[in-house]
Every structure is written in C-alpha cells, then in structure tokens.
Length: 312
Image 1 (tube, rainbow, N blue to C red):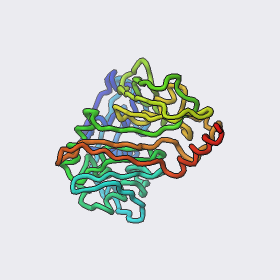
Image 2: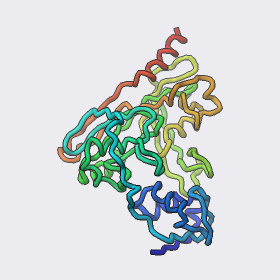
Image 3: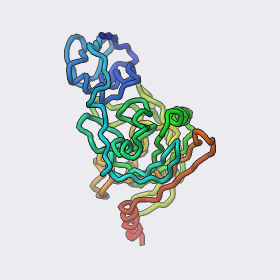
Image 4: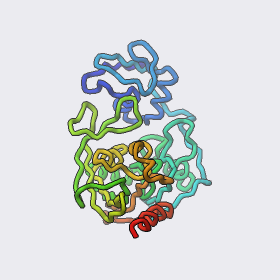
C-alpha cells in the first residue's frame, strides 16, 4: 500500500527516519531505517538516507508499508548475563551492565538486553510495542548501567507505560561530572532536540520545532578535586537527557566522549560515569509502591576512589 505525506513546517529539519517513526507508531525506528535503505521510501521521487533532513513541502512517499519479517525476530541469547534484582508474574527489574544495548538499533545488533530477556522469559515476545523491544518500557544508554523495569504481561506494559507518560516513575542516577554546578542543588529545564546530522542531542533555552521538554533535578553528594558526584533525578526520559543537560551546565559527565569530547582527556575513564541507582514505580497488579536500588559497579567505585586519594 502506498502512502504519501507532505512535510509541514512543524516537521521541517526532522530526520527522515524520525519523521516516519512519528507517523508509524507501531513500528520501530530500526524497521523504518531498513525500509528506507531498501528503497521503500522516497522523498520528492528520490531515494534518501535515514538521516536525511527534511524541508517544508517535501513529499515523502512510502511505497511499501513496513511489516514484521523474519529479520525482526530476535534470537534468544542465554549466553548474555542478566542480573535480575526482582521478578514476579508481572514485572522484572534488571540491573543492566555497561556496554549492553537495550534493544537492537540495526539489523546487525544481535547482542542486546532484548535478546537476553526472551531467553529468560520467552512469553514476553508478545509484550510491547514492537517485536524487537519485548517487554521494554524504557531504556538506558549502552554506555550507562543500572536499573530497568521490564513488563512480563501486556497489562503490566500498559500500566508502566502510563506511569512513565505521567512522570510518576522515580528515577535517580549517580553521575560524576567534570567540574561541577555552582549550586548544591538545582533544576535544568531545557528543551531537548536532535542536532542536525549528528548523533548528539542539543539542550536549548529557545525550543525549535520538534524539540521536547525535559526536566532534570540535581543534588551534590560530594565535591572532589575538579569533579563532583551528583544524584540526578529526571522527570522526563528524553534521549541523552542527563548527558545533554550536564553539558549545558558546563560540567559534562566524566567519561562522556560524545558530549564531553573536548574535556574527556582531563579525566580518562574506562566508561561513562552514569548509573541508574534508584527505580520506583507502582506495581501494575498489587498497586503497591516498589522502590529498588543498585550500588555502583566496581569500575565506577574505582574511579571514585581515585579522586578521593587526590583530595587526601
């Protein structure tokens, strides 16, 4: 079936794959990217790349609507370690390790949390918005670690999704930043949008079309020589929200080679110092308030001890 869209001013400068994602809400961006690359989508009659920036008036034609194929089916991976903090018939709470993607971003990603989840709980393959995100309600960056809640039933998925949409989920992170904010606590309320032709997000005082509101609260836990340990609480869950907001404050996250590139050499770190340490939500069935915590992984503890020695 052929579908045609005319780009309005609201969607001008949006990436082609992002634009399609907003119009095909039951499909993942990776599925749409594959469709674009295969030639199933044209702009003004010509083939484009997924990151092509649209302009007002462009005509986007989807020659063949994306559908689930065998390439979208995840292969269970029992060999991927899975740290389960809590589980019952409805939900599971996972402590995700550093370096693990939450779900496939491309067809070549075969080692993700999603692959591990279906190996442990095969029935969750029918839970979620798309087959490549079984039970997954929210994400953490590949280079971050910490707590994630996974839905094991459709009812639980719907409940958790509503809680995230209403910003009632408690999410706290341990974040070490280069330098530090001038105040011991504060709030960053800057809209976030994708930088054109870039893998980075931009935090802006004056929002552009397509930007989303983002609210981040921070509290100083400890000040070390030239770095500061923060507890960060997010109200919203935008892509790279903490990283972009900390960079906007002038104190990028230690180990961040994307946002803190110019300052990364000051404090070489083996990984991004961003860990989801606290997660709280209302149980979908019992309606009880549940709160979980995860201590810093050893490699982050080692980084902290190094700065503690410098202070002494």
